[in-house]
Image (cartoon, rainbow, N blue to C red; front, side, top):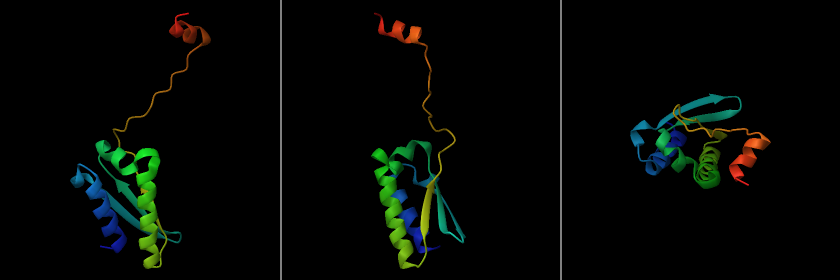
Length: 102
C-alpha cells in the first residue's frame, strides 16, 4: 500500500464512527495521483467539517505527503447514495405573503 493511501486511511478512520465503511481508491494519471474517498453517510460531516475546514486540512496534508514522494496528490470525497440534499421550494409572492400572516 502506498504511503499516501496509508496516511489517508489512518486519518479518516480516526475521525469517523464507522471506520469499516471507509473505502479509498487511488488512481495515477498524467495529472498526478487522484484519491477518491467513500465514507458512511452518517460520517460525511466529520470528514468535511465546518465550512469544509477538515477536508481542506486533509487535502493540504496529503499534498505534503505527495511532495515527499515527488507526486501531486488530489482528494475527491464522494457524496454517499443516501445523502441529504436540501430541497428548494419556490413560492409565489402570494404564498410568501400568506406565510407572513400579515
